[in-house]
View 1 (tube, helix red, strand yellow):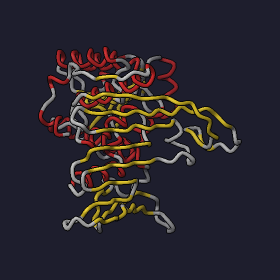
View 2: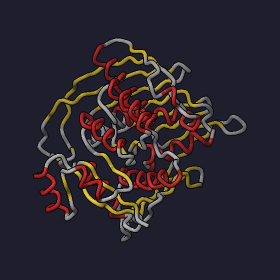
View 3: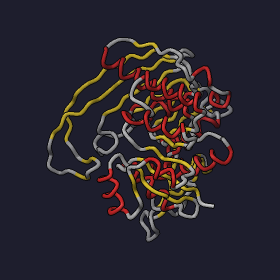
Length: 365
């Protein structure tokens, strides 16, 4: 039986979900779109041929199995609570709120209303980050002590830091700085630019020192997602080795240093196959395999599609794909990072309301 999904909001991110639902049409069905205004709902119906409404009760009458909430962080809390009251499961786009107060309010309402909320944090499901996690979990690097990342922003970065460092809900001290620097524009969501125009860009740097001694070094330029002249960089250091981008340096069982590379395999490169990602290998073994082989989708779309499958599994078993607690913690750490940068002061995090409800399963994530 197909899982029926209601989309709330229809921006850039919602369109990715719509394509993912269409790609897995044997498992999922988009039953409709809920918008803020009648005019926008009519535009959506005309644009994509899917029924849309601005009426909450009408949308509920379509009997969705779960909702994908893709609205602004300002509006997220209101929508979440409305669906919690009706016991409708929600896959909530990040971040779940825009302030520490709202994060705590959402958690308190979730407890009161027994909400069924998962967070649509997709980065840990992207091929490269899954491969990193698998190498870390193999133990060849020993205990991971530091992660230095210049690739993804805010709460997404906090999620990856916590995954790679094995951080649950430990508190930390954050210091940071913000710089405005010029760069030549090359590409953004609208496409390529070849005018040579120089624009200002913001670069944030922060040191996040957890109470257990592990450290995350955050370094993000707003051009990192699109610009080919602002390359992404990763460094994951453990007691017995490190990962530097796709190179892995580690000690073997005789304590001899070994350097090997991760290899990515895609169909459609230099041949006539339709493009699709296949796997990432290391030491002659596949450490990540695309769960949707043959689909012509990029890494982010692979992760988003994986979220859909995970959400369905959550409904069937209660097993989290990405728990509300983890999403709240990521958002909280990012808000504290922003405060440290804008205030110029050292910021200490403290236990928030969702910490006392953390389960052993969450701690292991």
